[in-house]
Image 1 (cartoon, rainbow, N blue to C red):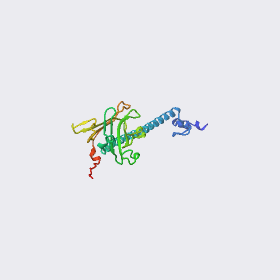
Image 2 (image 1 turned 45 degrees about the horizontal axis):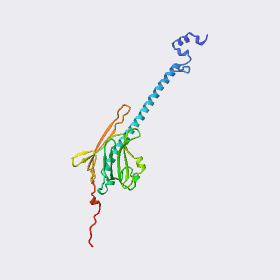
Image 3 (image 1 turned 180 degrees about the vertical axis):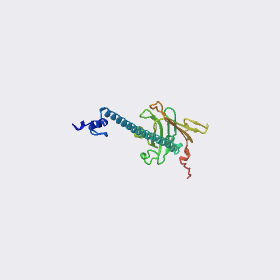
Image 4 (image 1 turned 45 degrees about the vertical axis):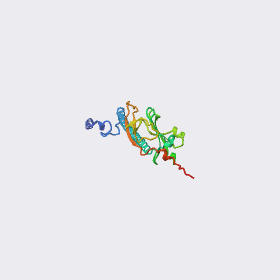
Amino acid sequence: MKPNDHPRCRALSRRRPWLRRGGNRFGGSAGAFTLVEIMIAFTIFSILVAAIYSTWTLILRSKQVGNEAAARIQRQRIAVRTLEDSLTCVQSFQASLAYYSFVVQNGDQPMLSFVARVPAIFPRNGRFGDFNLRRLTFTLESGPDSERDLVLRQNPILMDMDSDEQSAPLVLARDVSVFTVECWNTNTLDWVNEWTDTNSIPSILRVGLVFGGSTDSYGKGSVLAITRVITTPSMMLPSGLQTPKVSNVKK
């Protein structure tokens, strides 16, 4: 009689069926995964990898959006600060109106142009060296992505603007939908959109900027409106003070 034919062995095999497969109840060497189990495990692994990748992509995208928003806000702050610094340093002389004219233009092509003795921390100071008395021209122009940008061009007084400054101006802020400049008229005690008084410079200006407005994937964009009332601490120097008087001396 074979050992496995013993009645007690057959009864034990019926109670413990894994003994008939030659393995053990804890996953012996004879146990193997079926194709269905492998496919289920592979599917679960793929879902986990896809979830991890989606989460990581979302984190990177959120970081990129945050960096872009921070850079945009910083650029907007620099644009407003540049306008304030330049207007508080404006200079003008009645005897040289051809060089010191104060120009305000609103509408579809807004422009603000004047002469100022800019501070040491003014943008692009290193390009002009010791020529800190410069004409500053702020304009709103079309950008590379069909948006409108606030740009600044500079040239030293009594010198023409070079080709590099003309073709590649300093971009102060991108996606600017509105740029307005209003001057306080002391005669009418009201704000005016243009300055025609060539014998003086406005004592108070109100500058308005609207950032954003370009359509996004949802058909609308965020908008930030900023208004600054800036006082010019200087006044136009009269011709009598600029030109020295020659006294008649009798011989």
